[in-house]
Amino acid sequence: MRFEKLLLKVADEPVFRTGFLAASGEDLPALRLQLSRWVKAGRLVQLKKGLYSLAEPYRKVNPHPFVIANAMKKASYVSLHSALGQFGMIPEHVPMVTSVTTQRPERVETALGQFVFRCIKKNWFCGYQRVDLVSGQSAFVATPEKALLDLVYLTPGADSYDFLAELRLQSLEKLDLSVLRELAEMSNSKKLLRAVRHIAELVELEKQQEEL
Image 1: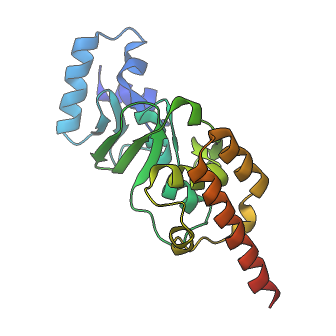
Image 2 (image 1 turned 30 degrees about the vertical axis):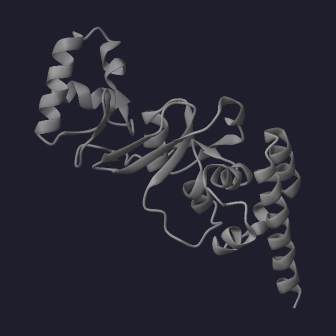
């Protein structure tokens, strides 16, 4: 395959897979060799085995980090601090993208960012939605309620009032307390139920401060 042909196929794609190119009848071993050469030449960025993005200045679309994260593990969604930051619910900048998955945990460092995958049980793999991002891109991201409970679920001691207060949660009007309770009850986790009680206290405290 010539590089000009590759550009015609993937110029509008934020990321692409080897299989996408091979589907048009390309010889797979030769294709893999050519992709490796283009990575070495700085024309492509390899994000993971079989997953690539065009390098600058060839790309028309800058891949959003959440799109990359979703592509790295199909059975995953962005959650925890990354999702909370996306919804403007924590004040800190989040330097890496954290997702949850039912597959093995993993940390991946690429030229386009760092990506962390935390493992959860299959019955807790829920509470996410497709979110529109930039340039027509979209990704699966936890709802605000699920992102917060995923953080509690995966962090030791995160059900304490002090831990939740130290998050400095903001825009708490985005949280639906009834959804939080339903998720916690569904999990049958005493830890999550305790966390929901403390979160409700923080929401009430914010309301009281706004009324002053």
